[in-house]
View 1 (cartoon, rainbow, N blue to C red):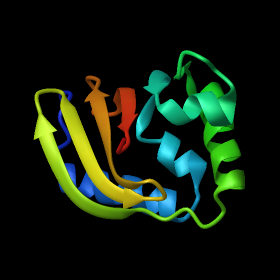
View 2 (cartoon, helix red, strand yellow; view 1 turned 90 degrees about the horizontal axis):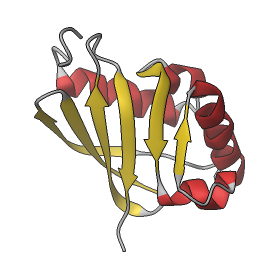
View 3 (cartoon, one colour; view 1 turned 60 degrees about the horizontal axis):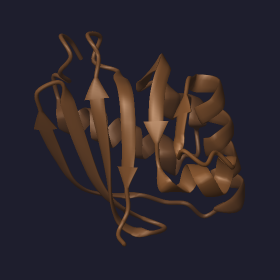
View 4 (cartoon, helix red, strand yellow; view 1 turned 180 degrees about the horizontal axis):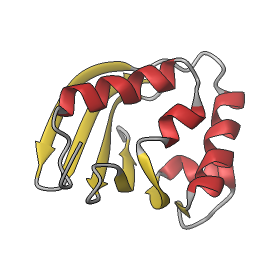
Length: 120
C-alpha cells in the first residue's frame, strides 16, 4: 500500500477478514495507524464508551478483545470491497448480518479512521 491508497483493495480486505477470522487482534491492528480513531455502535456495549468512539491502538485493542470474548464464534465473510480517494469500504457478513467497515487511509496506506456500520 502506498500514497494513501492500497495497491490492491481486495488484498487489503482479504488480509483484514483473515485476521479477524483467526481472532488475531494484533494482525487486525496492523492495518491501522498507532493513533487511529474507531467508531461503532458496539463500542457503547463492549467498551462502555457513550460516544461510540475510541482512539489509539490500546483502547481499540481492549475493545476488540472484549468483543471476541463475548462472541467466541465470530466469523466474517467478505462480500465486496469499494475503493475511493484515500478510503476503502469493506462489505461483509458477520454476527449482525450485512456490515460495512469504512476506512480512511493515511499516507502509508494504513487506516487512520474506521467506522463500522450495521443494519438497523
